[in-house]
View 1 (tube, rainbow, N blue to C red):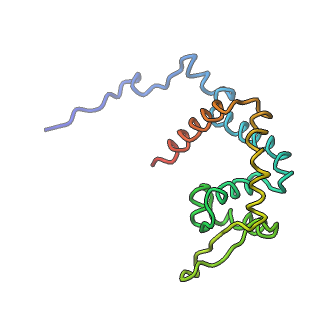
View 2 (cartoon, helix red, strand yellow):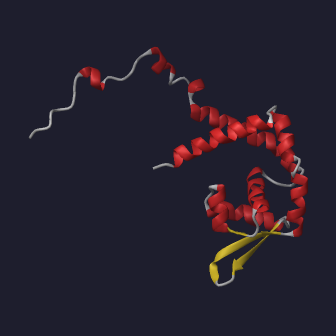
View 3 (cartoon, rainbow, N blue to C red):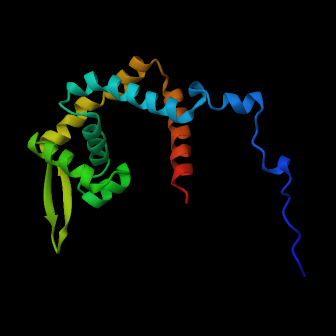
Length: 163
């Protein structure tokens, strides 16, 4: 039994040249462009707010994860922050130098490193409580809008994580 050939007519292989398809290539219609600019803009808006805490934005993310659960292994932090451990290591060293965290080998597993909060790191959380509200004001967003943006971004993250 032979399989019929696929449609190889010119129409089957042509590209969509409709005005809508042509508009798809406009920079202003590119999701990647909007996300890239929005990401840089939001991180830049955080900068002066986080300076009061003596944190960079990536360090703030690490501290958020540790305020949720401490101690955590570097592997656990890497997974929750979706960062490579090689990217995390310099941040962790800086946070340790600032006195906010400790890094200690896991007993019985010399390859694993536990990251925990110091008293100063725990106290920093009280100062950080104002950051979300301040950022909502700076970005002119309501709590509901932030929740909706988070849901949308998490859906995009999930969609790009599928193989």
